[in-house]
Image 1 (spheres, rainbow, N blue to C red):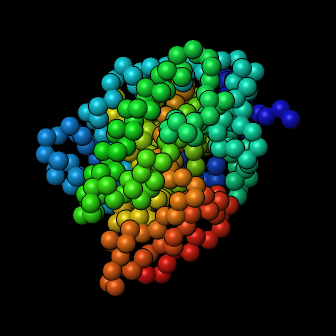
Image 2: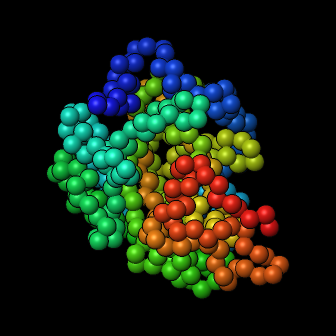
Length: 338
């Protein structure tokens, strides 16, 4: 069966002022109606190179409690490597369609090139194509899903994987210290050296009606944390105090999302961020999130160090693979009633 990709739909829609009805969001979700237009607080930006570690820990903990999302600068990944990562990803999506289809997702696989084929509960679709593949640890990497064109793709992604792991480990350490537990507590709880790094490239082509469509619908990430590199086209929005607020583009910054697993491990102290993505009329938005995910068989529940008679566990403990299955299939996760 031939799959219809959003990139192809966008090409056919060029010059039109309409989009297929399955991409028109309900009014309660349309960004033209629901984006907050007034003066809004800025998403926190944190300098990871600040010499006072306690200061950085406090800023990260506060942002993770209040927002569930923050941007980091001076994170140690060379700007030239970020540029190369964006370049090879963009080149892949500019390949002929039949070339991209060589990496199409097999049935029941998270990894590979694809489009979210199933419609949501309202029968709607999102304006995005994507590519998923794991980049670490080596034992779980499947090069079948790594593009062979452009030629530099593999080398650049392997280099980025090394650098993004250093950022990820530093963030997990600071998040642990912010909970006043030992610095390796969260890293160990999400799998230690077996923690998996899943790369995704999102490709949001120009859309004739960006006021009606969404690139990604409102959700929280399944991951422990997500480390996202955007291109220069803004689009990420965060739900804060009931309002959809734009994340402003900061060159070379990384956007850090607190995911569901850190919310659970922190027993609700840190907040998994509800977010969505807008699209643009004239420009292509792209982003490169890396999801830090526990191995599927690992059980995740509130850290025992944080559970007391006065602060009982707020969440059930699940194997990560079962948590994914239940969340994706909208089955109850039985959050405890305090």
